[in-house]
Length: 193
Image (cartoon, rainbow, N blue to C red):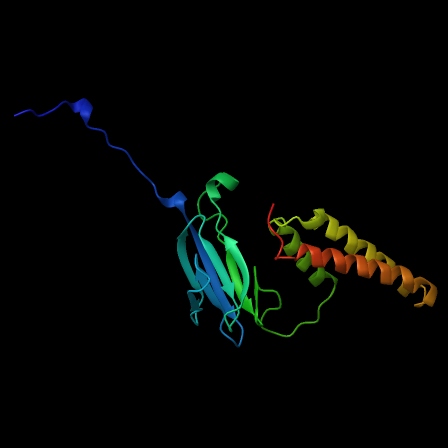
């Protein structure tokens, strides 16, 4: 009977943790949002409690309205290669609030008066999101920010001047440029580069 050699025995440790990412979904709406995994035709309603689950990286999460309309899609990233950090570092959280999916609570549970800090917070959410992968007409987060700045600065000049008719044209032109840039940025029918 041949017993082999000790050199034939190899023990290794395999961690599957980097192959998974944790996703958290919350419902903060009177209606119940829906989600799908890798197949937008197979949707599930959000549970009444916060939902958390592990999925393989590169899984496609579909976020749907309460009527089933697709509102957003997110491919889960390989956290270790993207951030060189531990798994679950980028635990994506999505909140269904007032019929819309968002990356985190925007309005919260109580009515609030929105101010400059709220606008700044919304802008930081926009900038912290992934870049526009559709790249239609070379529109980027930065170019859209520049159009927004041009509109707001023209509006401030118009307001400080007492809303004179002569200054309204610059505001209207800047508003149209910003709206056009935003429309192009949000064009999901375009093909990704």
